[in-house]
Length: 173
Image (cartoon, rainbow, N blue to C red; front, side, top):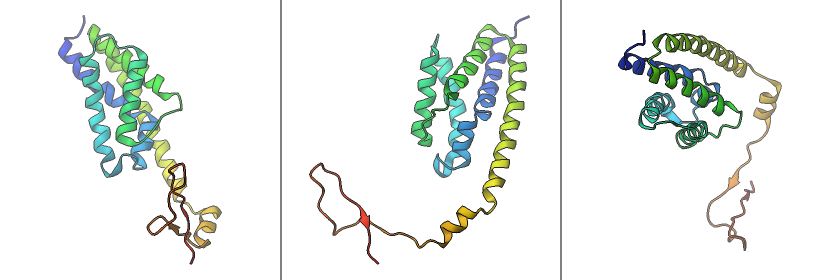
């Protein structure tokens, strides 16, 4: 028996959260502060925005969903995704929405369980990456030993070049 539409609508929201939570590119953007100090809030807002986008637009094409996701990531996280994951995430979202429209609660629940497991794996990988970043490396030590370079970007400075660009040079110490 098909689940009532309202139940599957709620499951679709959980599915969107699971898809975006298991999307490594988005999680990296949040983790590294690409969205500014409110990156986590933006990611949470994105769940609702994606859910609303699907409910407000009938028969979305895969490239429309990809474009929407790319625009949100660009506008909110200053991030351009070029790893091919936009197509995968778009397909996952469309599959979940199809289940929602058909009232297939069991299929949604199973998909959410798989995505939640993947989300946990992404979280573990991010934790491991953070701990690896925290360890001191020779390159970081060398960088700390080098004197800091100062850039002179203020006035007075050279006039703009003929093509309109301003040349920025190292400030003499």
